[in-house]
Length: 252
Image (tube, rainbow, N blue to C red):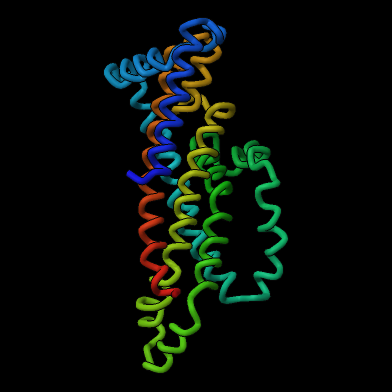
């Protein structure tokens, strides 16, 4: 383990230990905040009982659909922006201000268009993530070294071979960053939407436990969510770093 990683782990362990001590000694209101050890017990009880399995699967399916749609549309959109500079000049202001718009205000309209089901939440996750995927795809295509493209033309590679052997491998690290952001943004949007807009799902169950003062369930669900998202983010980060490290000698 590297020194920065060890320091980060030590910081997390120290913060958890401090919260445990503070909650046990009632430095923090024990009614509204329980010790991390009780959170872990609540999470284990939830897993062992399987009580919220349907809600967890529902949230994962909704977020997964949003991720797949945002990656597909964002990748195609990034290619279109790269191939058509005029289209890019038209859409640049929109992309720059994309995340200044609260996408949740479109939920009533999405219900009218898509029905009172899970698809409005999928659409919110899609809207929240697609811009990040498109921008990073565009960034990756723009950063393909010109010397590689000149080499492809010198070797008289066909267009398909140029894309397969040159453009995609060279732009993949940046495209993968867009994939990582799409996963994170889609989960954030779907779970936040379930908090306030849904009658089922992981976010809804957390909000329901909060409204009923069921702290062990609420914090247990939150801990499960943080653990899952953290593991997914670590896996994506490791893959991203591997791709960037492979690209460094090529750029040099």
